Image (tube, rainbow, N blue to C red):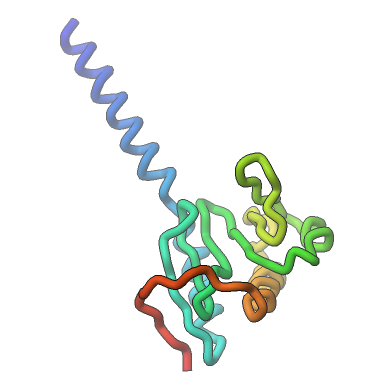
Amino acid sequence: MEASILDFVLRHINFHFEFKVDSMAYNTKLAERIRTYLDGIPKIKIEEKEMFKGLAFLVNGKMCLNVSGEDLMCRYDPVLEDEVAERAGFQPMIMKGKQLRGYCYVREDGYKSKSNFEYWLKLCLDFNEKAKASKKKKTAARKNS
């Protein structure tokens, strides 16, 4: 009887350990794809920060993109909400039961092709120029020349 209880406890601990590790994971290939794209843009400061259970890319001190699990999280001009919502892979960002306009998740089918991937990144970068920055904390940044 003791062995079966021990087996149950070990399986239970293993399940929770794996769940916690997996719930914080993000698509590293997608992150590298974003990194490569952003590195090709001159004169922008890029910071990477763990946020929103994933990896955020801050451009010139402002949150621009995020890799969350397998999804791309985008920040864009809320005026474009209706147009953006029609794109393949679009998922509204819901926070505290309300849709957060100007933010969305994009499933892999919406960013897999080069043209769709570039659409989302350009959309976010265009808005980044006029987006408001949050209060800054000192972090290390890399600057593209």
